[in-house]
Image (cartoon, rainbow, N blue to C red; front, side, top):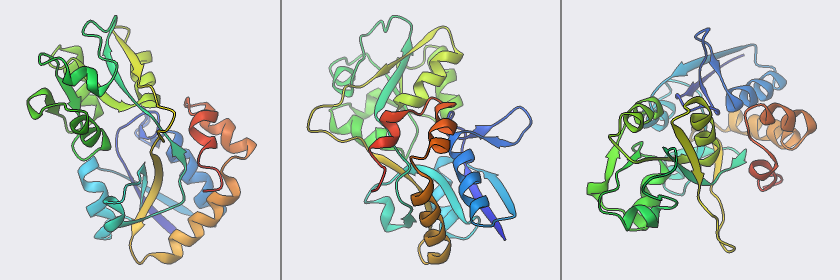
Amino acid sequence: MKVRIAYIEEPPFYWTGKDRAATGADIELAEVVLRAMGVSTIEHHLTSFEELLPGVQEGRWDMNVPIFATAERAKHVAFSVPVWSLGDGFVVHQGNPKALTSYEAVAARSDARLGIIPGQIQLGSAKSAGVSDGQIVMFKDQPEAVAALLAGKVDAFAATAVGNRVIADTHAELEAVAHEIGENSSTPVGAFSFRIGNDRLLHDVNRKLSEYLGSADHRSRMAKYGIMKTEIDSVIGR
């Protein structure tokens, strides 16, 4: 049995390692689950964020690595059970010179420029908070956005707080700023996605995920990538 899975460059969840092989927290999670299902061959396909949903819909691959599961995206693909829950944050220059601690803080400064990857949920969050189109700069992927931030072309890059910590750990000039989560707020969840109608694969993945998520082995593997109790516990049993 062979399964083809698509991924993008977004550490610590998925990226291409020095050996040119796919690696990361969600790559490892997929490996464990698919092997437990009896899959003998796993093919990894590097793609862009914008191609994840069309690619799995068109059958170019069988499943996507976890991305945020939204109602709009669920019109086009079938999502697995959630595998993590992640809050947003910014990567900024050390000292956060423009005090950008939230989308509202960006909106309040007309001179602030925010880097975002098209199609990701951070775009909607920024616009809902009043960030104007003129303040938003789009980048094709995380490496391009980080390079622009380092070059001073933007003041902040919006992504997940977990992923931002990895970026900041890699670049001494940068720091990660996590957004506060209100008492009545909930953080969005991420899940694998499949072509609608590929029920057998979806069912089998869900069954193994339900058995594995929250186990000691799962927690240990995810902790290597900075994904801890906070990101896991809220999706267990959902």
